[in-house]
Image (cartoon, rainbow over all chains, first blue to last red; front, side, top):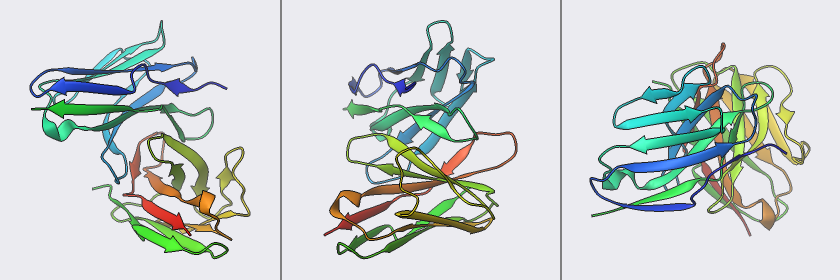
Length: 112
Length: 116
């Protein structure tokens, strides 16, 4: 079936560098995408979202880019900090209702 | 705002017993709540969508008689794992939707279930 997936399962960056986490989706009907951060043993925490009528959205230190042509979503974190170390999931709206389908996740490790 | 709590945060039970997990929206009313399970180093898998005052909608492959969901009020949904088995051991996470024409969901901290 259609699903959301990620290109890189793990990503290691140095503190202060910028991080880019990628996500590919296959459901061309999806019109809402979200990035979540999950720390070990905790629930997901909302980072940023974007609707399909946009191709870029910025938050505090984070930017989400959406390329509908190639069905690609990315999360950019500026000046990555140790506290950014976590697993990051992209999610898209499911086919029905307001449920979400989650991608596989990327583990981000920030080294000093 | 938009805080969701879960209780208990962790539970250990014996095979064959039932366990109830509560999900509460603390500062908003949630018409819809969602239940997910997550195995170690894996993603969240949607189990069911819980609507206040009506029956839950289960995802394909999720046994509704084993995972009983009740959404009796706008701030509380419960998931009961009946006749638990070791393979039911997992991290169960709920989320609450803000309602209206929005996909925004706020997640609880999760409940770690271990069945021995």
